Length: 237
Image (cartoon, one colour):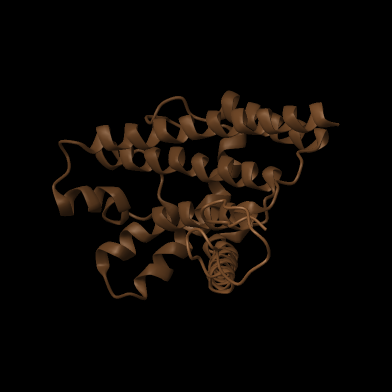
């Protein structure tokens, strides 16, 4: 036999005649090291899934974008491009913009009642604009969790479209040209009240433009992401 430590070749024995290594103890030491190594590997394997369970849905593949869904959302995108306001200062709505605005208005008014529950007057005023952005964001989160690209893109178009809607209301706080629901007086204008309360008249138009351009940027980026997703699906198909 050959000694595993000094490589001395000798007849079978309990210990090495050259270096004195006791073979049984040496083998026991190797067995303990193997046991420890296997235990560590098991612990790593057990911890690895746990670390991935923070957001397990992110590991699921996206659902493919079908061509009919891509065409529908592309048409919706084009309607935004053609009919949505190109400036925060407008005199009236196009038919398409008016339809979308009326849907958002329902959530806007509901937001006032919803956030008034917290007993904070400022939050109740802001709640209208906040809620009309919050609802499509919740829809976005739901589709994103389901890894549904089509639904996610639709929700994002709706979400960023509300940025444009809110930005126009913000800009109108200075000019008071938009008709208020129920024919209410200017004292009911949300953004006039908010800009008055926080003395933001020096930046009111700047804030509205930031909101406006964020909305348009989001709409374009959403369609670009949808197009790439559809293209990837089409190539695989």
